Amino acid sequence: MTRKDTVVILVIIALMLLVRVPLAPYTSGSDIAQFAGFADTFLRHHLCFYNYVAPGNSASEGWPYSWPYVYGPGLILVLSPLRKLASSEVIHYYDENGYHVFIPSNWIVATKSVFISFDVLSAVLVYLILRHVGYNSKKAALVTSLYAFNPVTIYISSIYGMFDQIPLFFFLAGIYLFYLDGTSSRGKLVGSFLIGLSVGFKPTFLIPFLAIFYDNLVYRKPVNAGILASLLLGVIVLFTPFLVACPKSMATLIETMFSNVKPTYTFPISYDFNGISNLATYIYEHTGRNLYPLITYWWIPTIILIAVELFAYNNYRDALVFSSTSYIIFMATYWRVNYQYLVPAVAFTIIILSRLHGSRRIKALGLTYISLIGLWYFMFPVSWWTHVHILNPNTALWHALDRFSLMIFNEEPYLLYSLILTIVEYLLSIEVIIYMASSKVNMLTGEKWE
Image 1 (cartoon, rainbow, N blue to C red):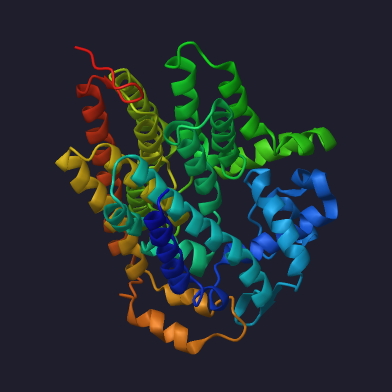
Image 2 (spheres, rainbow, N blue to C red):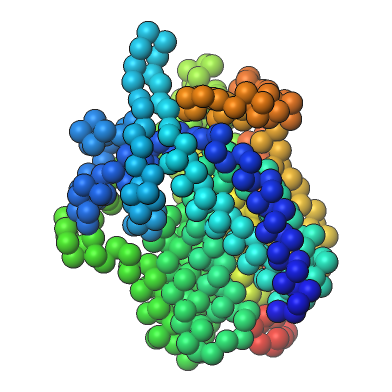
């Protein structure tokens, strides 16, 4: 890395913090309140934590909501030390006006400090990846800004507060070390371990992980058993202490995960990003017509697109494009997509654009997709998070956010938005697959064939 790169990275970091830090203490989504409950449960039960993650334990554990813990151990291992430092109680109660949840500012700041830090680090890795694929520092900085200053990344890390940037960082660091940095075999082992570690934070990274695993299992000749073992070790290392201490707790986790991903109608439509599921939900809500099969069989288009992508990968072997496209396919087809899932989608789309920059259609679709993801921020009344969980709201920030919002409350615009977003995801995935299928080159070696 050159001195100029160092300066550019420091500028990116400074500007990202300048945008994010002022928002963080005065806003919070509901998940941050629930994270406090999860951390308290871990501090009480330690490595038997997963015995208490099901919704039925919410009252006895004192969680503000009944939502289960459906993540890998990585998150709780991050949250628990923070909870030791910021132990103020989350206030939640019913009165004649309904249910209220107020989150202490020290817990908001503690959690968002970590989320913002990994958000910034993820942007730095996007920049380094772009530099290694041939972009000059100016162009790399410009393209990195599509992630660094996209409303979705600002919203998720600094306003609502979610942790998808943490597994994204580990995955990006892993592919950077493994595929791009040209390090020693030890460095590649570290990279493959980090790729696996991303799954130990959030199961949404299982799809791109499997793409990397498949690449190393099928196309690396001879097969490197150490790399495969390192990939798997990254996945299981965080689970192992929990499994050893309380073997039955893993069964509880699996049962809870499966019950949580069971397809249902996607209420509210404004906060789901699968257009097909939202259309079925809207029709059911307004006409009573049951289109539930459109939701419950979401896995059929997933399998079809992944299978075609695997076939195309025989021609165009670029693991970065392969894993990134696999994630976009998952976003296009999974029955319920939360806004935080789209943070990695922005980074993965940038990687696709950087590797397939010769295709104008892919560039147009990719930039459209990134822009659409950011558009939702301006549709939704995000100022809601400045006061719903904040005991003493910052009214200046509240009104400032309102000035940048279209304040859309009706369902129909969100339904149309999610349909367009899903269509673009399908088109982008299909276009990349077509590009891969029509190109006969191994991007790892540069070898071409007829």
